[in-house]
Image (cartoon, rainbow, N blue to C red; front, side, top):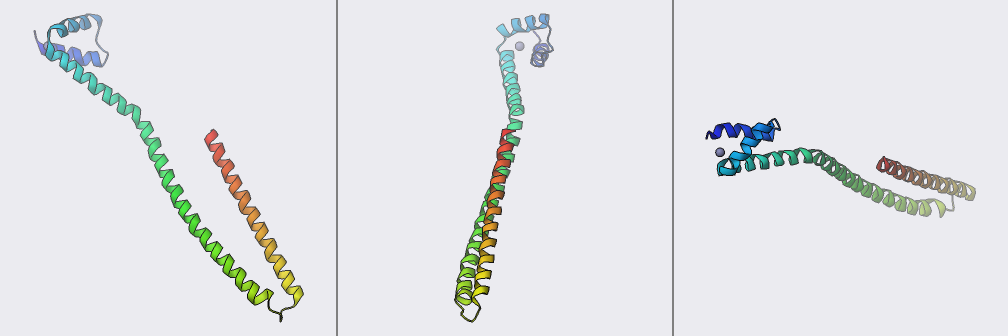
Length: 148
Ligand SMILES: [Zn+2]
């Protein structure tokens, strides 16, 4: 028997272009021919791998995007840490100089010291409130994204 013909039938079977008569002939030949049986197995395995790869592709894309987001988050996290350290250092040293050179300076009038202190305290409270609202807002936005 001519194997070449059955090789073509195997290709047709994989591509699902084989008709019933051809399939019957092929199956009959496969019963007696190990070479073609192995061929079919190989081609089927190959086809499975290709399908698996096609199936995995969208997941790979999501994974890549996830990793990108992950690095962006780390970067932003490090940025925020340095930013916070800077703010804390500035606030503490600012507070120290403010108390030493302004609040405890008896040459500055008491009303001016009281007024400036109230102004700064008010400003800090407003700042904290705005930042807190901003953080809360961001969290809610992120939650919305997840829900979608
Ligand atoms: Zn054969």
